[in-house]
View 1 (tube, each protein chain N blue to C red):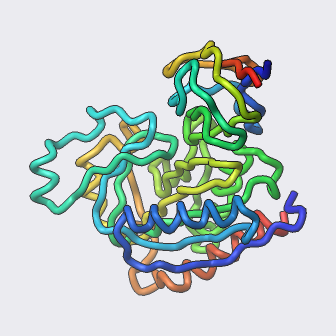
View 2: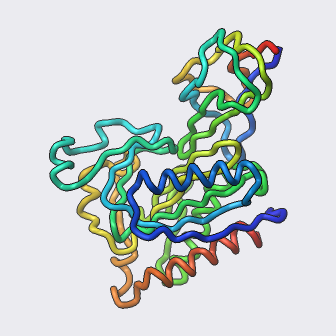
Length: 215
Length: 77
């Protein structure tokens, strides 16, 4: 399926959500103009609640002032999906990929993101699955990774956030993805000492390579 | 006249919601400019204008559900 597709990897570390968005916009323009084919961005965000295009305000469960006092911003995002939360300890992955090389298939792109994350988690002996009709990655009926993307000029951006070792209590501030679901993280299944974020990034980049360039 | 339609978006996607028109009926548009945004369950998709001309008619306003292949507007070149 790849037909000559390849991508670069860019690790932005801990970065403000809006700055991360600016990076993506610049890369979308470069990729649409043909300068690059794709860039896989890794980053983490300071606590921020983002509202996707389908978001209902009532899915943010606490008033703005309370969120502000907790240092949590609320930001509108032009991705698909409802409300989500980013916070340190969660790996945010933005595959800014030119879908012209990938069959111009948004459904397949979403399934392949799930496939890469599931394969990574399986390597850590976490039995993760996709659920039909509920995009994302799930472990024991709990959500471990949320997905929401945007496509402009057939270049995809936004992406997936994988909970590694974050404060899951903060998800009680929202109805994640507009649903009554429980979130989980890799730390619930693996000893902290075995969770090396640098290693997870390397492994996940390789999973994306396997799924998107060698598929 | 060029019909604007919801294109094939891929596996398992048969419909989408028109979430944003970048232009109003009667306005001039240029080929390649963002024309309309669609939203599916987990994705937004920006459709660029296929031609330059005047957006004469919006058949599917914001908030409307449309099927793949359905006409949502017309542009007169």
